[in-house]
Length: 112
Image 1 (cartoon, helix red, strand yellow):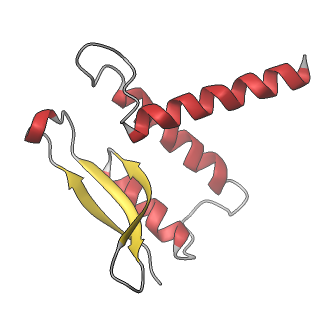
Image 2: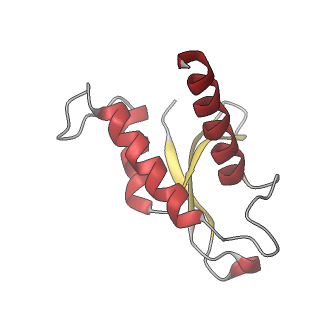
């Protein structure tokens, strides 16, 4: 199995403000299994490379930090993308933001 990315949304189509690139793989039955969404195509390519066992110029020790930085960048670019509110429970990016905030809250509670 190899991970790939596809352009899953096009800017301007059905109200999308940005292109969206989804990383994932096709299972043996041919069904698409998504892994993550990215606004920047380069970030999707980096994720695919990493998932497929590749390495970039960064050391493997810094790779998780690089992925976190990419996620923060994409989440920052996502802000205000929804009409009528900042949170849409059907949006994978909004759900990710909620999960991150919940995790940060749990860490804060455990370290207080």
